[in-house]
Length: 148
Image (cartoon, rainbow, N blue to C red; front, side, top):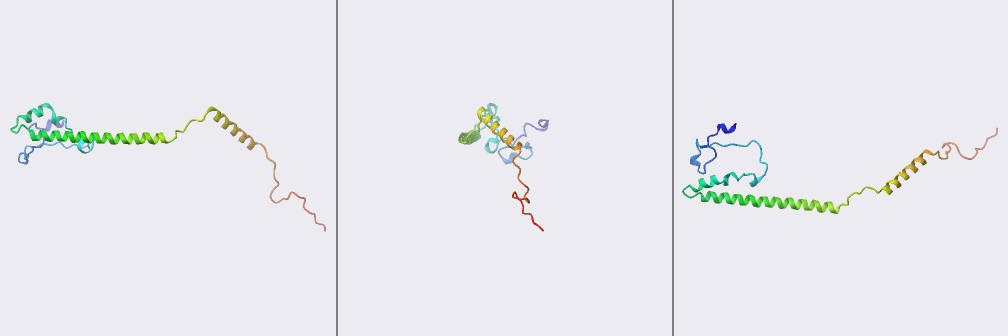
């Protein structure tokens, strides 16, 4: 749909400012790049064979521009390698952390049975009546009787 409004001869920016007025159409993305920094630039279409062939037809054979494209691709490659190295280190640290922490293990069947036995004995003790104590006001010894 958007492509219908574009003119193939006006799309993009010329390298010279003098060529901009009236000869420029740009698309501005409304969503952010999936990658950040230098990796957000898609260089694939810039280095395809038809583009390179067109650059070679120029008077200077497009050498300065082609050098810039090669440098950009090199910088992107180095950045990708750096990010992969960081991810690798983060994964390694996570793995080492997991190896240091003891993994909680499921109790054995014997331990479960022992625990059940203790639970049932505690329940039995709670259900058996204990020796009743006298109320706090009354003494266990006979009270002296007073005579009148």
